Length: 149
Image (cartoon, rainbow, N blue to C red; front, top):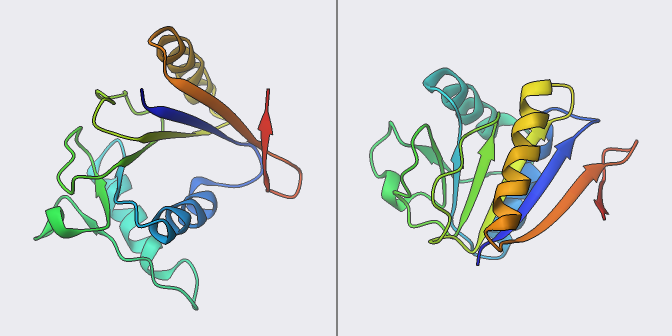
């Protein structure tokens, strides 16, 4: 079964929380796909990952660019796994695709967006019933992740 992690954003925005998580995946030589709801969000996130910090480089691409299959981190609007990722990030309340080809799935949801919180709760219940290993992380006041429950 796929290990599923829920990250509850309460102190920062996705744009601040996602890059360090992606960097950790790359340090472990994991290929990643990040699913977003639409082309505008994909393009904003793509731009952000090129410039989020002056002293870093996070190699990535989008499903709209050539060689998507070669990207270590691929930002996509669809359910495909074009880069043969072992980790899938789902942001902004994305519908969960089949997870059987992934070692890990990561839900990042905004604690101030009621729809995203409700979606995360629904997905938690469904995935738990399917037998996946679930963990829940919430930001503390300093923005660090604390494992809950």
